[in-house]
Amino acid sequence: MSTIITLTTSTQLHRRSKQTQSPTTRSTQLFVILCGLAFALALAVVTLGAFTRLADAGLGCPDWPTCYGHLWVPNEHHEITAANEKFSATPVEVHKTWPEQLHRLLASSLGMVILGLFVLACRRTPSPLRMYFSVALAILLASLFARIFLGAVMDIPVLLIFSGYFVLLSQLWRKYKGRATELCFTALLAGMVIAQGFFGMWTVTLKLWPQVVTAHLLGGFATLSVIWLLLQSCAGWGWRKAGVTLSSGCLKNLRLLAGIALGCVILQVGLGGWTTSNYAALACPDFPRCQNQWWPVADFRHGFNMLQSVGPNYLGGQLEAEGRIAIHLAHRLGAVVVTVAVLLLCGLLWRTGETIVRRWAAMLIAALGLQISLGVSNVLLSLPLAVAVAHNAGGAVLLLMLVALNHRAWAKNYGVNH
Image (cartoon, rainbow, N blue to C red; front, side):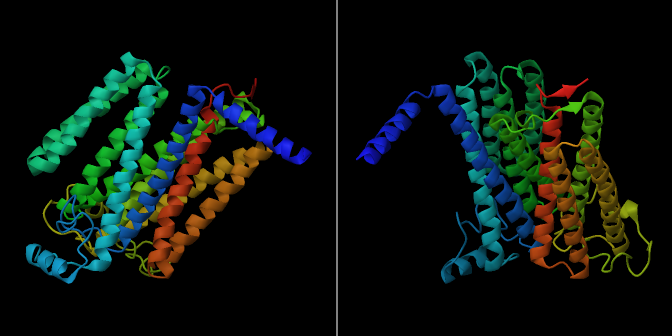
């Protein structure tokens, strides 16, 4: 009997505690949950995007935003026949349609969640401030629908609108960051995810033009990183609660090395995107040498020509062998630079003597080692799909770890010994 009474009492206390939670607390919890959902969706979008690209399914749906005129994909025999008649130059390949359209649907779901975060951030922000952000985002959304209904004639106006949006956002960020941090973050994310929608469209309409494919990949990683940074901030994750205290000199060096390592990884991700968009992953089929030479003939001017013509279908790549070799070599050299930068950072983290900080050093070394192993395996095993997708995901994990580490290094109210 006493047990029943105790259980009843604890249940009543739990209900009372929920009832006494302030609206601000509940709003914060909802915001953190939505951030977590957005992060999970963004990670799925980035991973599935890598699968789609590496499985040569980037043109699995030759139109946008539909797939052969369908909201999903043509499945029935009569649907496939009709699609083949309408799109005779690109007949239906079922194993390529579903990854492309699923990727679009997941990206659209991510966009809806981010818009939900923006609305929630508006409700948590004073009225005069949210009006500026809301009007700017409404103009951006209008440009998206205008492009869908009016076609390619809107491409240049859309680019101008996006440029204006991000310039305006940078000004608002400087002016209101202290009072509207969440709103600034969510407005940035909303702009980024809409931009990603356009890049996804141009990936199809420009037939896998490498510049657009690489920008699309970088945009996906950037969106994932900003969501991760927002989650770190609103959830209050950091070293401060764990009582980590560093000397001012150590903290200064940590910020410097963490920033350098992050910059190196971002450049390496860009090189990885350029490698895969130009189909240069197997330009060097051996390791550690390339074409059985330590430094084979490579044409870097050809490989890094950013003015490749628009028009041809870039599925399979258009570059000559020497250009692809140059891209592959650059990616390998980038891996060496990233390794040196991350190891220097890990050495500094280890010398702090703080247990939690040392764990970060160990995790970074493990992530770096795994990423190098996957990269070498891609070459020696001739780019198996599972390993190539894992290599892409490994790059995302290493990037996210460095974003989190930089957030911890620059966090305010942080224990420092002078």
